[in-house]
Image 1 (cartoon, rainbow, N blue to C red):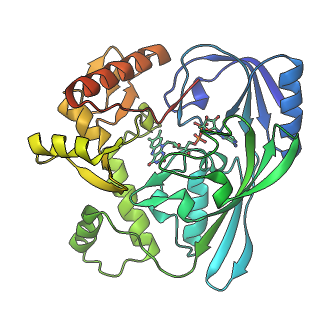
Image 2 (image 1 turned 135 degrees about the vertical axis):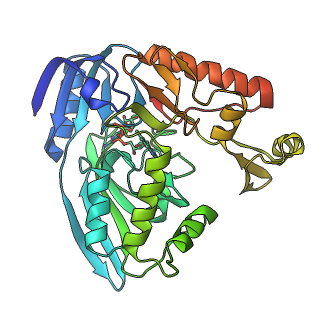
Length: 338
Ligand SMILES: Cc1cc2nc3c(=O)[nH]c(=O)nc-3n(C[C@H](O)[C@H](O)[C@H](O)COP(=O)(O)OP(=O)(O)OC[C@H]3O[C@@H](n4cnc5c(N)ncnc54)[C@H](O)[C@@H]3O)c2cc1C
């Protein structure tokens, strides 16, 4: 396993923040994972697992043993009628998996195109976009269990997926190191176009029965107008989760703001659009030094160049405070703070 000491992580996080890791270890084989865990223990350093670094905010130097998951692999492992099981190594780029599904005519993850990061991180927050979540196609994963020092296979129920949530972010935080993920995709066309603007955009293009490529191209074009290109502007995508509140709170907001986007979340709860709340508080396009709020989507905090993790988390705290003061709603970061 390649071991780099006192290594800058700037190139390994999508915010582009400079922060030195005491150790950066590149895990390219499954056997590297146990070795990395043992080395971190020997060196008495906390272990941190890194994928593509597109959902972390580095708030200072990393006095840690950072294990970067680079285990490759991407193949069809089983066919069962129209169902096709695709297994990928944790280090496989998520978009590589999307392209693999496209070239094999497999439906299920097309709405998740252009989400940066690695396959191994996708279960952590149950990645989601445009009405589809990982859990909808998830079959199983293999992970190194730090409690037993062995490998386990976990199914969908074990992972307890929720909105941007899983067991890996809650009860079992830090316990499992995911090495492989298997998804159950389908040869049968099943476009998910619940968002009305997706349907409208398709009809503008004169498409009534979309092919897989139509959906992928549509989602890619929508994302490119809203989100900063991670290669040009540092960000972690949505910085906050959309808050889920009791219906009574949503009703109060609706009464004074008829245009407020409110979605039924079931069992007496509603989901609010965090971006809308932030925009109402006047943050959209705000910039303080190099830390800012993306002018095209207020949910996205950006690093225009030299912002530090502390500056960005200070900005996030100011936003949380102002949304709480104005609407009585607590925003929760989606990003993982390191
Ligand atoms: C421009 C942009 C757009 C985005 N859009 C979306 C979106 O539409 N929907 C969405 O859900 N997310 C989105 N994201 C967030 C991000 O891309 C996803 O959360 C992605 O899954 C993170 O993958 P990563 O490999 O970069 O994870 P990292 O940032 O490296 O890690 C994220 C967390 O997972 C842990 N982790 C990583 N790999 C493993 C592993 N193998 N085993 C155990 N723990 C691990 C890390 O310790 C960390 O806590 C976006 C980000 C950007 C920059």
